[in-house]
Amino acid sequence: MMYKVEAIVREEQLEDIKSALHDIGVNGVTLYQVMGFGAQRGYSTWVRGQQVDVMMVPKIKLEIVVSSLEWKEKTIRKIQEVARTGEVGDGKIFAYEITDAVRIRTGETNYDALQDDE
Ligand SMILES: Nc1ncnc2c1ncn2[C@@H]1O[C@H](COP(=O)(O)OP(=O)(O)OP(=O)(O)O)[C@@H](O)[C@H]1O
Ligand SMILES: [Mg+2]
Image 1 (tube, helix red, strand yellow):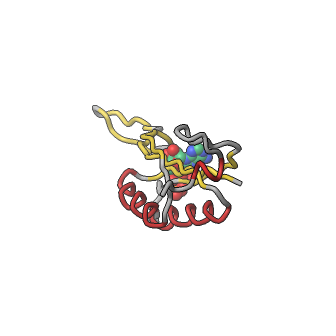
Image 2 (image 1 turned 90 degrees about the horizontal axis):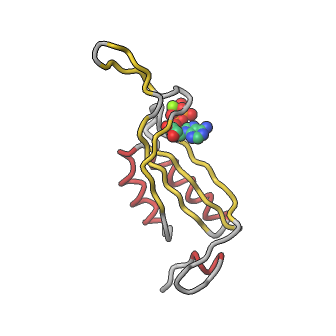
């Protein structure tokens, strides 16, 4: 079974997370700059003397598609370990089952499409 691990993390943690994923041997990552809010519903700030609720906080979203349950667990564990500061706003990790993967260049599918070429 293939899985997609999706992690919404602090921008400041990105470099550490990227190198940790590289170190454990993850073969691909997609990342996005996103806006979001969690349980604290964003935060409040003052703009020209008025208190406004900033509902959306900038975060980074990473997507990693892996080829087994073991890799899913390993990836989730590593991100949780590296992304954690212990303060609110450290982020969330979600995982999904994936039905299809295709390497466009070769036509390889699923497990084969996700392997390192060399
Ligand atoms: N239920 C959710 N669905 C989709 N995205 C979420 C959800 N919860 C959090 N996020 C995303 O994760 C980001 C960080 O969330 P955050 O870490 O504040 O979660 P939390 O549940 O409030 O945990 P904490 O109490 O540690 O802050 C949010 O800005 C949002 O982009
Ligand atoms: Mg929060």
